[in-house]
Structures are given as structure tokens and as C-alpha cells.
Image 1 (cartoon, rainbow, N blue to C red):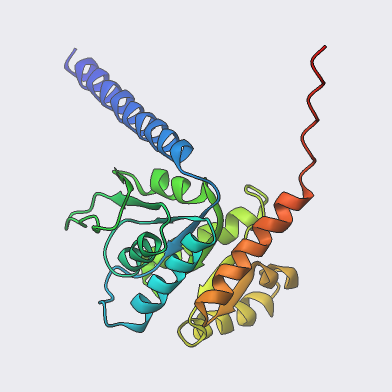
Image 2 (tube, one colour):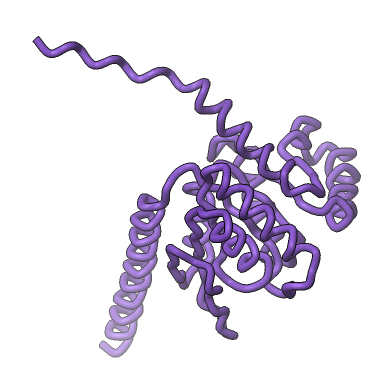
Length: 232
């Protein structure tokens, strides 16, 4: 009898956990649906300060995206995320932050118009992809790398439409890119055309132009909406 109560309690707890995850997905999708399109997601370290070159470049990048009519989505925290949201505000655009609950609390930055805090990384990462016409990835650590490789995997496997993945700061990423070419490519772990999924730049304007031009090409390829018949 005691074993049965324990099993039933565990089963109930699992159902509650699944429900919380489902509720979090629903809340995320509802928030994404309210975001003005098109949008771009910008990643990078939470640890860089205002005087860091990556912070300054992210401000400029966010501003240029806003001026191009793009909503800027980030992880909502400090560092590069704050910089990109700040730039979006300076450019007169919509600034979105999808934060995450952490053991050491990551506070939302003050430049967010639309914000949501998630408990689960996998829900949060889905919301980064859902509205995005491209990713721009600044220098960062494990979290940034996680988001970078998940984007490449989703594109490579056809789970999402092919969108630009832009690595900002060629010097920072050169070691990783060398490893991707050798041994990954050299040993046949990836295909040569997988390298085409990446764009590397040191210029905010080029990062923005890469995403914007891809979006414009995609829009141009869409079939025209049928004309409405004249009223009789």
C-alpha cells in the first residue's frame, strides 16, 4: 500500500511537471505571436562590460537592425544581451528579452519592451528560434555555444527554414572555425556545404545586411496573395 502511494505521488508530480512545461511553451508562443515581424535574435556573453568592444558592437548592431525595421530579441540579461536591447531602443525598434531563472539570479536588463522569464532552457531556446529571420552571435561562453550549435543543427536537419547564422568577431571565433574545418570537415563529420551555413564578420553593418537581405529574398520568393474579386 505504501509503495502504491509513493508511485501515485511520483506519477502526479510528473504530470504537474509536464503541465508546467506545456504552460510555459504556451505562454512563450503567445508572447512570440505579439512580437512585430521581422525579428532577429542576438546572442553573446552576459559577462562583458560597457567598455568591452563586443558591448559597443552589439549596441550598434541592435540599433541598425531597429532602423531596418527588425525587432531585436535577446536572452534579456546583461552584457551583450543588454547592449543589443539598448541599441534596439536607441534605433526606435521593439526590444525583446527572454530571460532564464538561474541559481544565481540573472536580472533582466532595463532596455526591454517585451520580456518573459523561463524556467526551462529548451522552452527558451525554442522562443529564440520561433520569430527569428537570423541569428547574430557575439563572443560568449557555453550558453552562447549551445545556442549556436543548436541553430546549425536545426538548419542542417531541415527542422527550420535556412536562415543566416552570423558570427561576430572573426578573431574570437577563428579557433572554433579551424576546428570545424579540421577535423570535422576533414574527417567527413560534416559536408562541405555545411560551412555555407556560417557568415563571419567584424562589421555591424555587414551582420545586419546579411540577415536583412536574406529576409528580403525570402519575401520576394513568396507567392503573391490572390487579388480580391470586385464586389458585384
